[in-house]
Amino acid sequence: MDCLCEVVQALVALAALGLIVLLIIAHVTAKMVDLTRHEKERYFVTAAGEKELFPSLHDPHSRELSVVIPAYNEEFRMPVMLDEAMDYLENRQKLNPSFTYEVIVVDDGSKDKTTEVAMRYSRKYGADKMRVLTLVKNRGKGGAVRMGTMSSRGRVILMADADGATKFSDIDKVEAGLNELSPKPENMAISCGSRAHLEQESVAQRSVFRTFLMYGFHFLVWFFCVRGIKDTQCGFKLFTREAALKTFSSLHVERWAFDVELLYIAQCFKIPIAEVAVNWTEIEGSKLIPFWSWLQMGIDLIFIRLRYITGAWKLQSTLKTD
Image (tube, rainbow, N blue to C red):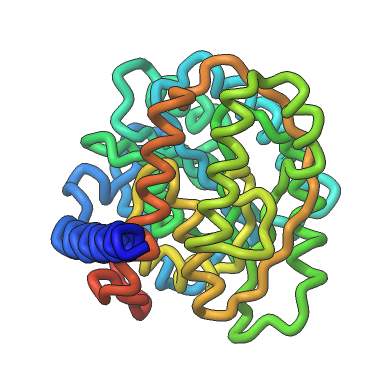
């Protein structure tokens, strides 16, 4: 019996030591919020080939809607999505001439012709409706979304994936979800597209290993960061301008787990969040590598929580980009 007690005590001491080491690693390796821009990232190119300065999220809105599309090596998948989005937006404007919008494609340091493809749409529709922000180096999806959001003019801001996996007209659904949220403290609210209603179907099509990874990730999200949101990773989220400024100013994670930190920040600030079912289709060409991407996201989730606990990361006031 004494031997068993000693083993238990040793295991507890070892676990405590491991936790202390993990906390130290999380604190020491924490990166601060990076809103700096390369000089080339301050400007967009007009249809006439002239450079103009991007506006700031800190400015008052001058458009009803901004659509931010992060894109990395998307020259082949993006045109289908842009055709669908621009058709919807143009038709909506014809039906309601007071409706104004802009689309910002953020080329996240692509090695293909993503910028050239996006610029074709800018020349077709004009730079007032379609702008291209080309990042000098790859930041990650979260970094790309933030840079585009911080350059937007919309009263509300939609982030949408370049692969077009979510039907673009489902923006009507997330807008309805946003409008139904009440009250909106300081006009802050977020509406998240969700694929949770498709989970059982996806489980039937996935391998046991991928299903295990999916449920493991969901548990880590719930345990460490975000509760009450079934699908944190759907790339179709609508923010009021005020909510975007509040959350993106504190965002540290720039890669796949950035959605989780965004929603964690929103819940810390008590920003109302709606979750709305949307249509979603698997599109070939995903940049996610099943095992390693899930592993990286799992590590990020643990470190998000630990870094806020240790004070390495703090919720920021509304920072400006440099």
